[in-house]
Image 1 (spheres, rainbow, N blue to C red):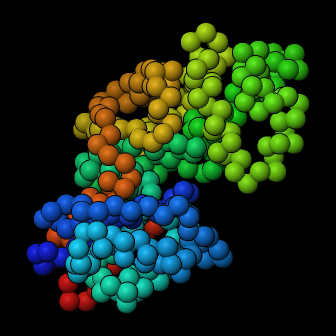
Image 2: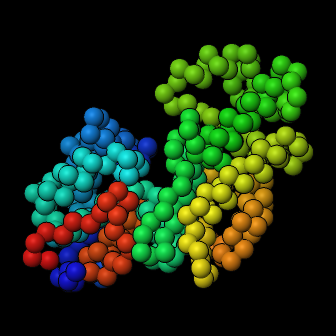
Length: 328
């Protein structure tokens, strides 16, 4: 790749379940303005809808350039939830749409797990676990990408917020029934949060935001862990699942860095304590480091490096694809 002309601008985007976050800037001056759109991009037969993505993005960019000043946008980096499995439409149509709209010549399309990785560790070998309502781990030795879990709350996301919340509510229902391994403490918390426990299935199952509702109970599980052995065991089991995913993607040989990022880890010591012990056991040669930034920071980093031709991360058809128009 050749370097971009001095003063050319980049656009970095993070697309997720809560909408779009976008930053505009230059490699020389860094990020200059930031905007948020609260409407998530739709998904359809071809996965993430490229037309709806552009409809959301265009007014954001107009607002960004009004704040930062007009500039030639030559580079765009997009990190999107679902890119690995639902990104065919974006990969096929977005580079052309960006070229027509702003003359963009370099486009990087990344799974949100990759932007979480780059935001947390940058271009270093290692593993990153991104945890919120769900959970996914991604690792690289800088020659390729590995991913573990991220299969959604029905099939996986083991150790994530929805998983912890569901396990806590199951323990509450066990206590309600008089079954073994129930928790009267979690039963009281569940009824305080959701009302009479017998009505929980009817209130929960029809909801389209079921994973988020389950995850909303995870902080109650963590708050009970100091005094409730059932809650503490749920978090220890979650920590084992998280460490399993990290170990599955962490490169072997040499010293690798491991970081965790996302709202899940705001549960604090009740989860981080057992997680540190599990990571030390499963990955004794790895070094746990704090995350430098979030997935939007990762998109900014990819965009800035792509704009100067210094991007060294490995490309992958589904995890990180780069399109460079002829002449660059």
